[in-house]
Image (cartoon, rainbow, N blue to C red):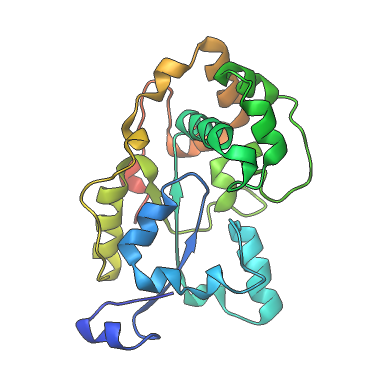
Length: 233
C-alpha cells in the first residue's frame, strides 16, 4: 500500500511510502487497519490471488519473485505478541466462533467448545493436522517474519502489547500520515492472561515458542517484551 507522507499524497492513490504489512494473526490486525485507513483496505496484498491470507515473509518473498515484483521496494512491518497471551486469544476465538464460520476451523471449534484452556494446550502437543493453511495456532508468532534460517527479515516489528506507542514510532520513522486511535476497544488486549495458566500450561507454551521467547525477551510474568525498544530501528 502507498501510505501518505504529505497532505497532497491523499489525493493520489499511488503517492506516499510503499509499505507491506506482514499480518500475524491474532495480533491486532484490525487496529493496524484502522490506523492506516482506506489505503490499507485497498492494498493489493488483500486482493491479489497469490497474496491472500496471513502470508509469512517467506510466502510473500516467493510470491513476489513469481510475479516479477520487487519486495525490496516496500518497507515491511509486522507485529509480535506474547505467546502465552496469543494462545489464550486463539482458544477463545475459535471456541466462540460458531461452527467455525469466521476462522474456517469447524473441526477445531467442535473440539474446543468442550475443552478447558488446559485441554487445548495439552491438545497442541498432538493436534489434528489437516494441512489447512489456516492452522496458524500451530506456528510460532515469529514464523511470519523470519527466513528459513530463522533470521528476522522484517525491519520493523511492533508489539501487540503496546501497539499505539509502536505505531507512533513507526509513523515518526517513516514520516507517515496515520490516524492512530488513542484507545483500544477490545479490552481483551489488556486482560491478565496469567490467571488462566497453571505451571503445566506455562511450560507447554514455552516449549512451543522458544524463538519468540529468546528473540523478543518474552517472559510469562512480564506481559510486554523486555527488548521492546529495539524492535523499531
